Image (cartoon, rainbow, N blue to C red):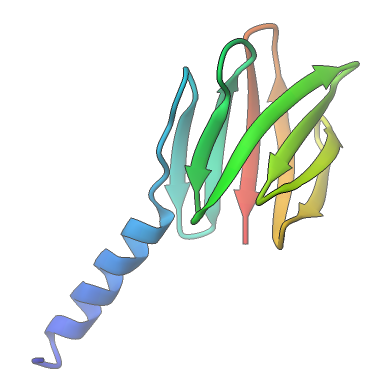
Length: 104
């Protein structure tokens, strides 16, 4: 393989790994430093990001319960924790959506 083609293929592979698939009213926005996921507070709320599944389990008293890579954690708005080998933070919470940041 030509040497100048290697960086382009590496960038393409990284983009594919970082790409998220939104589902059920959820959306993702991924970059080199992780993914921001906007979960709808109603309906199916799971997405695939960074090669793992992230799912909003529920919200109570400004604390989101999130399952990441099979591990469930409770995260208050503005806080972060580790789950399934990833850092998970809740950026905002409204009546209709929960915005979560997932990064390696």
